[in-house]
Length: 398
Image: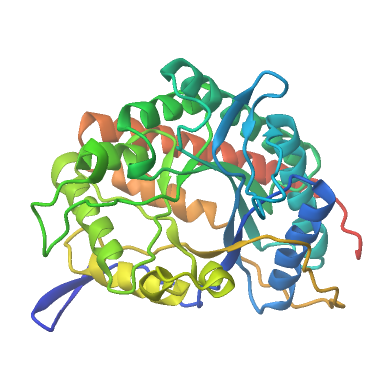
């Protein structure tokens, strides 16, 4: 691990560096589960990866809003309303599943001759307690969400697309929206459905950081709670929102990574950064004057903060920026083949990182169990990817 003294700080650089610029993907607040519409959004991402030089590796979060339970539909999500004058009916789990499949199919088909770029779809909800407010229902919703991720991945595998598209669960777990007890209950339910990853794309509101180490996290959360929902829980992977232009969000997450090192023996392994600059361009809210970090700015902020901490510096895999969907805006354009380089699948880097981390003798028992589970999930996904590569689905233009 290389060191450099700059501006009074010692920066620690990971030995392995990514020499290719990480291109930000677009994530979506969705008012619909229409698989035809979502196919067009997935197609957009596929075309982008086809036309970009080299091999792309991205995450797209499809956010379907807060969890609901309604007798008529069972468990589902509220969806995002375009206007209070045009309310959106909640969607059942089954409809969300079909919409995500449409997105996956669109990506795969429109990536065309590119047979090596990879997309992880985060099937997103959040932890707002607006419709479900008991521990039992919260856990049951998490279990239903996890079962949906299982079902989508099985479908993608059977279709021969898994080597390029995988589904993870995702939740925008924000501290002010619910208690740590309820949020943990949802994660426990999700975990009970089987081995799936859960992307946490939420915040660390009010939590301490280097310049304000005595702050308390909001809403009776503590650092252990935030650590658990982000990384400590066996399925959890952190994709934190880094909105603030002044860098405080990045500083808070670096502080939590330091907490993980000091209390559990290993850093938070960040999957990427999550921003809302596109959303801010759409709505131009006053709060956006201070929360419209671009993906590049957020990535630079978090990387710089982690590089100050021995053992926290790392390669961050993804950048994604969210926008609000009003209507289909997919541009139809011709696509052509592009030269594809041979390379191993990006999931093997994650496996290597965890295998190395598990060699440490200072891991806390909780984190050791969590990392072992994450490694098992990654290896199971890798096996499915290898099977999919042996019998890939044909593409429309091949």
